[in-house]
Length: 459
Image: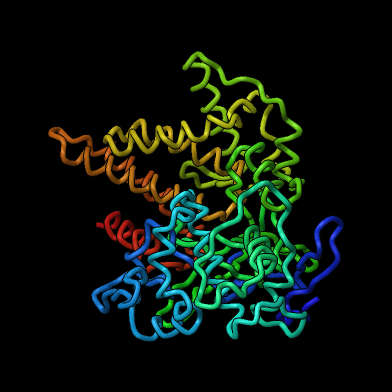
């Protein structure tokens, strides 16, 4: 086992079912950065190729443009530093063979996720065996590579082996070494995101080693892109966390249906989640059916908003605001509202909000968006980034309603003022979550939108 060097605020302890758990040695507040981890390897999603630097993941700006590799013309860089860093890391071994690999029938037969993993595997094999001596390193000091090889292998599942972009001495790579690398990163890589939009896959061995999963986490990960540097993951607390409490990250979206989460976690990680959210959802299964009569469903949605407004969090501006979001309150969801936990309800509600807001039907959009926020506050812990992002969308929708009413002839000033108050409230909700989460990914984004919205509402 690798001797892992931890900051004094963290402690590795035994766990009932997992390998170990990471706990706090002292109390911390929500918004505290717990740990910073540099990526061992990242690979852009196909949709982002040519739009970001392949090493640091930055997007081009007024200060720099991307330049492509003169060899393979498939990798793009924001500057000579990033190009040199990736060349030394792995690209010098792969460049001449990369185009032939992409055109191969083995690679072309892969789906999108498998293609990303295949490239990530090729880069990783080239990087972790720099001297082309393909033997698994023995446990030693806490380096990124040694921690990677200290990770648990993923569960044995039925999946085809991935093709490898092989360097010049490819025939010397034993198959069992390739499989060893693949089974370690297959369930130990993260979706790297900017403003919560995925842009790459990344391997952060120390984060994988330290943080167990929970669908009701007390921490989340965010990412920083700095020219000439590997991508940096910051693990941030989204709750006040007591001394001795375990630190957890979500390995997937907690708002996914229970069965989807359970199956994905078992297939990819080999365990069944027993976190508070999963335990609550299991306890109320099987769920009663959603009402087919529209008025009954609307009544149920009104009751959900009333429950959240009175027990968890103010959906509307109020001088006496209740802010709880504690497990005991979230899991007290009345039984008559349990049908709203059905797998197909949240996606349909989200689609309705998106459609009506884009079509300019802002009244309906605010109604469906308010219900969606209420459901998020049941499924997600308070300060979860998606809550802040959705509140920001609601603020923009309310502002669009203000502008629309002001532009109409015979404007109703009172109604426009009402929508402005709604926009300010949702902006406050978004600010509370997103400013605690802090800046991440590309420049601008939600924090800049908050500033612009505040300025517009003051005008």
